[in-house]
Image 1 (tube, rainbow, N blue to C red):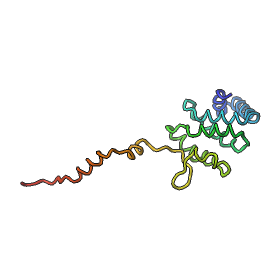
Image 2: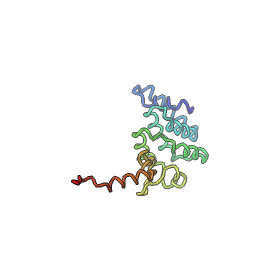
Image 3: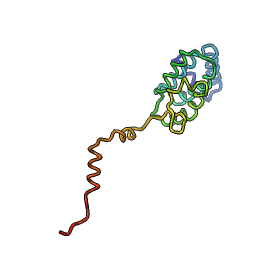
Image 4: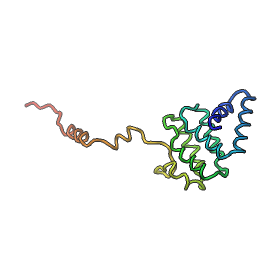
Length: 162
């Protein structure tokens, strides 16, 4: 069912009511009968860059809404392991997931278990953004480059009439 869940997620957003209702029924049935595997399948669909953006957003929403139910700690830890591998390249997913889903995933009850999945920012909120490459490069600036900059600043560029 892990491979088929993407098909159901796409079909659940269909304009055709028959297709949409059938897919929603299948998702509800899977959730009711196999909640831990349903959540794991949603997390795989969410973490897979090759899946359509719309299905991944719906997978994240369903995952967020379903995590409040009692699940096995093994499945919960597998989901926690997949969360850091969310696609950082797609800005829309990063923003929506970091603002909406992590805020709800990290309830007071679950903060201790998910604390290492989403690092805290300076203001105490949880963030899933990774530093940009330019930010990482600024931290690792070569000393000789800074020496050259200071030498250029000390050069007097005024014209001498000598």
